[in-house]
Length: 186
Image (cartoon, rainbow, N blue to C red):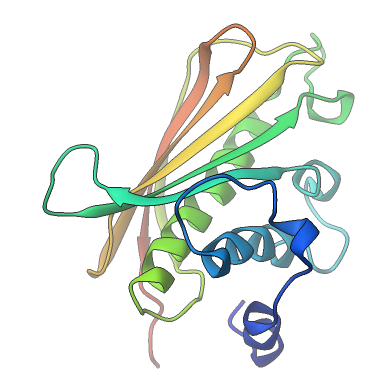
């Protein structure tokens, strides 16, 4: 990440069709960044869970007052995808490794968006820790809603949290908190 061609791609506009259905008060540019970062993380067309991640659809991007303090802002990004066979364990439920990947990438993108909206470089940071909690199973065919929020940004360590919801049953499937450090300038 952070290569010159990535920055060129991030700066180039997407076709209207790629963002017209994304709800939220974030700028069109921020909505495009959300879509583009999901694509950039899969730009080589292969690798761990490539097919899964390529099906994630960004549905909402908000830049709003922080839910816990009026003195701060947060990015709230909502994505969706349906549980498919390639995401399941031997029992036909969403695999915990897949849940972890979804939380990792979605939470990282929420931080990238927040930092970029506030004028920091539009680059991915370095994961320091991710704590996962697995709450319930999600069977094959379940529609998942992934909600990611930036918690704190602009410091040495940025924090974000994500939740995966069973959209039809209004049940929390998994949650996670990720801490990322700024990239070294060396």
